[in-house]
Every structure is written in structure tokens, then in C-alpha cells.
Image (cartoon, rainbow, N blue to C red; front, side, top):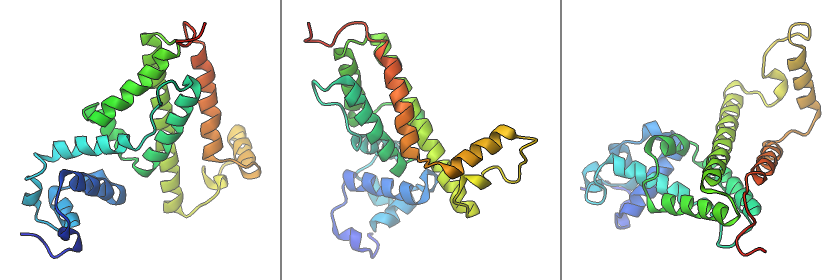
Length: 225
């Protein structure tokens, strides 16, 4: 029996269930996702979900696929460096909204069509640009690791700032002295007087990685003489 909720007026579908699961994870965290809570979110009894979803594993796989589907993928013929930059920037933006998804990707692997198309498009772009299979795989994992790590650090920093009420780098290490930790003090002073931003830091590191990957290309892009 459906609960008295305005959302119950719309037909229950697999897509609606997955979208609601993503919203719930965004708001409460992945650990808060239960079939009962998801049913409440949709205005239905938990048992009604099983008419469209086999089990929670299918929900988790579907959530991963939905999130990956939001990330921009290289278009056919795109120049590899710009394509990888746009993909990395897009992935960072998407995973900043759904930071819980990083752990889900790593624990469950590639299962949905969006994920398979995403990986295939990236590897195809790199192969077309003259990367060997081995180098393309290295490039794929290196860029993903960089994006994931940056999102995790940004999320942790934002959470820590909210919890302790600070908004400056000067209090990051508490009370420290220049005699004991001269380089930490130097770094904090630099942070307080410079225009630091996560965006600029991300772009700086991404450029270094792309510069390094250029050296892995073994042949000119397909179609070039």
C-alpha cells in the first residue's frame, strides 16, 4: 500500500527508484540507504520496490551507472589532451556532488552500460591519439586516481571546516611554532597571503599529468601524416 506522499502520484519505475537512491545518498550518505528509507522517499512501501528492482545490489549498480552517465565523455575525433582535460574536469564536478560514488565504483567495478560506454570512449580516444593499449590503460587509471584523490581531499577539507567552524588555512594545524615546524609555518603563511583555490590546484596538477602522458604516445594520431 502506498504511503500518503505527493511523489506516489507518479508511476513507480526503475529510473525513479535509482534517482531517488542517488538523492538519498547525496543528502544522508550511502550508509543511510535502505529499502525502507528509499520507499519512504518515494512514498511507497518498501516491498513495492521489488517489482522494479531485484535487490539492493541492483540499486547500487544502477546508482553507479547514473552517476557515471553525468560525466562528459570524449566525442569521436576529439583531440586527446583537451578531451582528457574536459573529462577530468567534468568527473571532478560530478563526483563533488556525489562523493559517496567513488567508493562504490571501486568496490563494485564496471557493471552498467553507461560505465562501459564511458571507459570505452576514453580508451578509444587515447588509442586514436597514438597511445598503445598499455599506455592508454596507464593514462586512464592515472587520471582517475588524480580526480578521485582531489575530490576526497576537497570533501574532507570542506567537512572539517564545517565541523570546527574555521575558514582559513591558518588554523589547520592548531598551535605550532616556527622553531618546531618551520616549513609548516611557512606554508600556512603562504596560504594566508596567496589566492589559493581548489580549482587552480586541480588545473595545475592536471597540466602536469597531461604533460607527462604526452611522452607515452608512441605514434601520431590516426589520420595524421
